[in-house]
Amino acid sequence: MLRLDTRFLPDFGEALRQNAPRLLEARSALLARKGEPGAMLGWLDLPEDTETLRLIRRYREANPWVEDFVHIGIGGSALGPKALEAAFGDGRVRFHFVDHVEPEPLRALLGRLDPGKTLVNVVSKSGATAETLAAFLLFLRWLEEALGEGWRRHVAVTTDPQKGPLRAFAEREGLASFPIPQEVGGRFSVLSPVGLLPLAFAGVDLEALLAGARKANAQAQGPLEEALPLHTALLQDLHRERPISVFMVYSERLKHLPFWFVQLHSESLGKRDREGRRVGTTALPALGPQDQHAQVQLFREGPPDKLIALVIPEHPVEDLEIPKAEGLEAAAYLQGKTFHRLLRAEAEATYQALAEADQRVYALYLERVDPYGVGWLLQHLMWQTALLGELWGVNAFDQPGVELGKALTRALLG
Ligand SMILES: O=P(O)(O)OC[C@H]1O[C@H](O)[C@H](O)[C@@H](O)[C@@H]1O
View 1 (cartoon, rainbow, N blue to C red):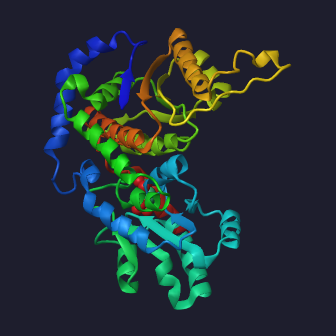
View 2 (cartoon, rainbow, N blue to C red):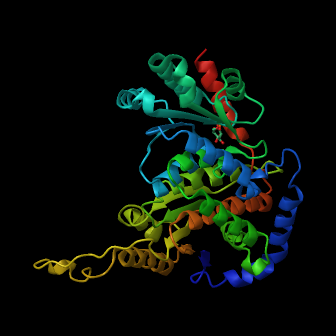
View 3 (tube, rainbow, N blue to C red):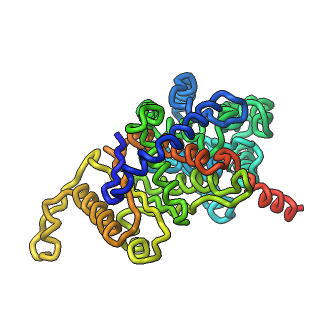
């Protein structure tokens, strides 16, 4: 269950009423394109895709020997699974996310792995991303040297269903491969095999994850009063003149989630609109309670250039009591309380303190940090982003601005 709280934004109810026609129009415009080739709305259907789930399950069961899982991919091909594995992985398979090209950590990783017990999963929609291909070549050589012809069983490829160099390679070598549906872009792909395959090896409850995402889909398409993504899209829209959109999550397990959101928000919305104007707000990742001791000073007393969204878990999955001890009177107020109660109190205190400093802040209450709740949150945020694309007149599903950097990298390498 996901719940929006706007108690410190008393003007929001009225704004929602006034903006209802715009919001409903944005949703209709988005849904009207569903099914059109190139509309890139395939992420809407991923939570329903039980066939892919079945294939992934079967592959996981056929490979019980895997002890180390190397996930090679970057951006949308890494950030979602990285966030969810950290949150919900059962630790039985060790995960290694290779979304960089720094030689020292690559060497160190190869040095610690046993090729006979390692599955190398290469993930790329385009099949042509430099960082991903470079790392894949390295791991391919390493597997071939250690295992000879047997290397093939140690590689899985997740890429475009038809196009691209990795698809061609997988077919030629007869490798296990999984499709990223054509109509699903990288940063909207966490519930496709991009996320599902690694998370199956991490022991995550995939059904619950997808069931949560289906709830977000249902809510988003329901009556305006219940359509939460329309509400948070409006909150972001009303504050678009504030250049910074803080995404602060009160959960250690979800510590990588803000980085997934940063790509989703920034790459989808930071671009030129149809009139050529530059639009977008800068997503700033933050974590509670750690950032209470780092960024919250700025959020409270710094310039009023931010909209702050707090994600706050309402209940723990499992709680833990803070023990009592003699001779530590300073901690007396903590003793006998639970850790969740402390976390919640800190979140509420920050929420209130920010509002009292006249900062614009709202909260998304997550019933529990579990796959169901987080599946819901992820799909909610994808809806929010897609709706903002409509409201701001930008195509939320392309990223023309990153192409020049890629071309220049190639040129520099000769
Ligand atoms: O999945 P890939 O095709 O390898 O792309 C990986 C990432 O790099 C690209 O440059 C895009 O900016 C991202 O949107 C994408 O997620």
